[in-house]
Length: 418
Image (cartoon, one colour):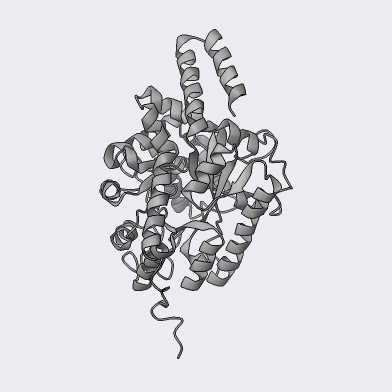
């Protein structure tokens, strides 16, 4: 699979200096590891990028070509292959400001988009719903395509709809996105429940029963703790980083990382610059303060000229691959090697760290970790073994609960007949 890349690495090693030669050798070793261990990325927003920029049409861009120079996309088949990606959770994201009914409809449309991407390239992609599927598809030389819902508002307060999404192949659901839902608090919105509402607890229990992973990226710390208390299966963070390294509300605090080690779950570290770079967090705060002083909206589609002038005079610092490595290392140090994974959030962000231009970056990231002393066994766990273990444990819990009847719980204060 990686014969050409390995040859290129060997040529570089022959003519480069010692440091570059070592880097090339480590990248080649990473690619060899990924030939037998599928690298499973926890979160990629290509379906939404196709919807927003390309008419929701998988044929509108040639995914068989390297699109780095011609589009803003981070993802295409050549770069997936170069990155050694063996399993991809495609996010079926829809905006948090939609009504629940609109969100449900558009989530189905996003699931359809994933299926059409796979159908358009059957020699490359195959839908997967189990860990065994992922292993089998990877061994066949294809990329296992899994589906994750990003935002619990998509179920429209319906456990029946949750079950139907599972039947359609969804294997994780992020309980919230940027806004607090009718049953769970978000990390980036005002709290309403102090974590999960009673109906939110029922959602988590039903996810356990049907075998859908509980994803705690985007949720408040209180929601994290409630979900881990209620869930009988390990939880995941599909695309989050470490709060102790970068103080962002979207990151995972150390007390939760320590609980993850007990829970058995996995934190899939994301590469979003604002989540991995402390310098960027500080810059964003300075920008917000300047916007407040000027009385303008920093998120306006057309920025105020005065705010633009400030940004030009104070350039945004760039995140780096070293920032990403620091987060991966911290999660390992606190939670343990069995509880760390990768969730890039490619095509869900406008910018990426230096050294990470697209989905082909994974061997560089793994090589940087090996330079820090990570062993081949460590890399295999990070790349995919940890996620496969969690998938199997989640299914084992579901298998043990199959005799239980489906929950008919309704959200408190809504949905019940008069």
